[in-house]
Length: 209
Image 1 (cartoon, rainbow, N blue to C red):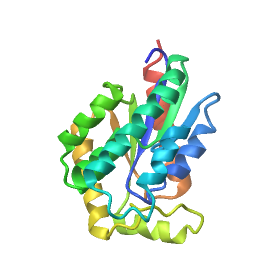
Image 2 (cartoon, helix red, strand yellow):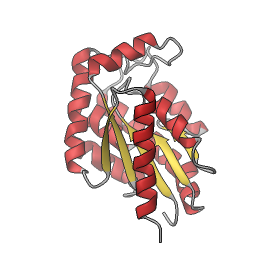
Image 3 (cartoon, rainbow, N blue to C red):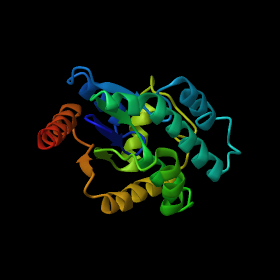
C-alpha cells in the first residue's frame, strides 16, 4: 500500500452497511466501491458457490477456505492496484467477517481462520474498519422487510447463529481496537450515515502528510 486508504465495512446481517457504503462512496470522488466475496469475476463466481441456498452440505472449513480464496483474488486484482494508485477503497466486508462468521460462529477458532487469511492477504489489513452494530433480531427483521435484498445461505441460519456472529465481532473489536470503530446501526439512516462520514473524514485528516 503506497498512498491509498483501505476502508472496510463490517456488521451482522441486516445492519445496513451495504446501504451506507454506497451512500458514502458517492461522497468521495474517484473512490472505489467493492464487496466481498466478489468485486471481480473470479471472486463473484466463488461467491455464488458460497452463498447458494442449495449448498447446505458445505463444511465450515470449506466455507472458510472459499472466502479466503475469493479474498485473495479480489485483493490482488482490484484492491491492491487501486491503493497503489493512491485511491480510497471502500469494501463491504473483509477479513473480520471470516473471523466472526467462520472463526467464532462456526466454531473454527478466530486464530485458525486468521492464519488462513494471513496466507491469502499477506498481512494487508485495512487502515480503518467501521463496524455497524445491531441486535440480531432487529437485523433479521430488516432482512425480511427488504423484499429487494438478496437472501443467501447465511441469512437463513437460525437466530442463535446470528447471535454468535455478533459475539464474534465483539471479540474482534477488542482485539483490533486500534483499527475498528463501532457505530450503533439502530438509528435512522441519516444518523448512521453522518456518523460514518465523520469517522472517515477524521481518519483521512489524521493521515494527511
